Structure formats: C-alpha cells, structure tokens
Image 1 (cartoon, helix red, strand yellow):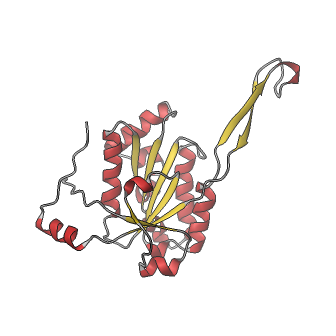
Image 2 (cartoon, rainbow, N blue to C red):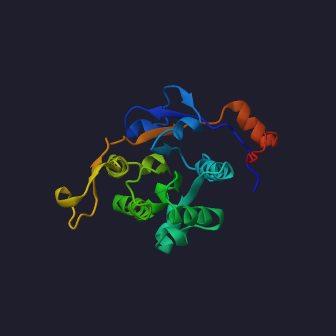
Length: 230
C-alpha cells in the first residue's frame, strides 16, 4: 500500500484536560514525529479517521528500515488472540522475536488503538491489555519506548491516570555488587543491588489537522511517496 508523507504535526499538552481534547483545541508549538519519539512514553490523541493508524504503521516500518527494532500492535488483535506474539504478523512479528531473543537494544512499540480495546465499555480492559503488552516487554525496561494512539473520548481521566501509573514506572538500575560473607547472597556468590530511577512522566500529544495545501495535494495524489532509507 502506498503511503504519502504528509509531515504530520502534533501539539504537546502540558496537562490532561479531556474537554480540550474532545474539543480539539490546539495551543502551542507544532512539532513533528521526531519530538514524539524523543520521549519514553507518549499518547497521541486524535479523532476517528485522522490518520493515526497509518502514521504509526509507517513510523514503525521506517524505524525498521533504519535498522531499529519497532513493532505496531493492534490492541484489538491482542484482545482476540491472547498473546503479543500471536497478535503480531509479518515484519512486526519478526522484529519482536528478534528483539525478544536479545533484548538489549531499544525497541519502539506503537500501540493502536485504545478505543478498540474499550469496545466493551470498561476502562479496565484498556489498562489490562496495555498491561499485558508491558508484561511481555519485561516492563519497566529502559530499552522500551511507547507510542499509544486513542480517540479523545476514550482517554478519560481514569484511563490517563492508569496509563500514567504504568508507563511512568522507573526501570531498576544496578548500583553495585558484593561478594563473600558481606554480600547479599550466600556461598560467596556476587549479588547486585538495584534501585529505581526517577519516574518519567507520560507525554500527551494531539495530532494537528492537515494544512489546507497538504489536504489538497493528498486529494490530487501529488504528495511525495514515503520510501524507506537504506
């Protein structure tokens, strides 16, 4: 399937406000995907048919083309199939399995979309499914980067709070080792103590509408086709 690079823009929100999200009010500097991907975990909010899924699919493909691990996860598929490996297909499954075999490099996980997980009308189903993904990624994990999409009405205060609680968890880090009778273990075995790093807040972005000239170009089919770099 052809993909046309529309140079989509976002506005980072300083705080959660569902009324503003639903109204689509945008105030602040427009930023691109590079800004979103600077963060450890981000939620992208936009209305239906705004292009969230297409953008995330292509961002995952572009990262893989650049030699990075990245997967696109349809949260509904996870709900239907019961495990992350069975929910993934094609290049996404291959990328996940390769990373899982040696999980020492960064992987970017694009999770689409919370509204499908909430089809049953329960916020708990969202946090449960995202939690399942987190478990399979050994979260909290310093090598995992999250990007999650949702419609504004689904991102209630309760859902945002639960996601923040989960995705802001700090990854443990080693702070030293000891051996012999003074160590934490027995029989002279070395033991490594760990402490948690500072929590990293979940970032919130709203996807901006296409500029008029971009929308016209898309309808004419004369925008530049996205091609993966070598």
